[in-house]
Image (cartoon, rainbow, N blue to C red; front, side, top):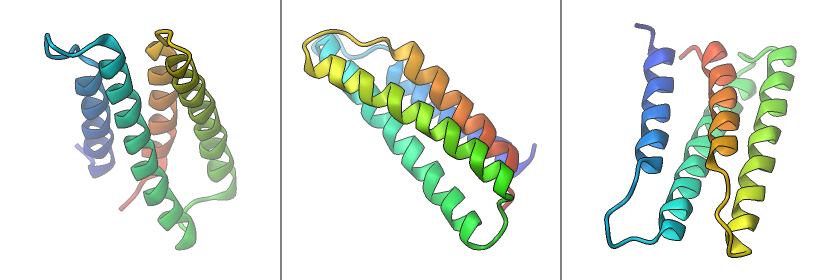
Length: 113
């Protein structure tokens, strides 16, 4: 298995674990908040890695464009979910998860340590 695949699997597993239920004494709002926080942490870590690759000239312009586009979709989904949570409603985490998956898929496809 390539290193980039292991990296992606690790990040996806981390996100899924954060979304997978909570302790009995936690409210659903706390669980949703923790899931959103974890997804943002994963996104930020991947983005920093990609920025370093871009700085080193290892990220083609067309690839960079697609990754930025997918990152923007994730950011919008994440921010919408956060605002929904702040409004006292339960956001749809599936949208955030799908957007993060797409971003990580594109990122892992070009991540070559």
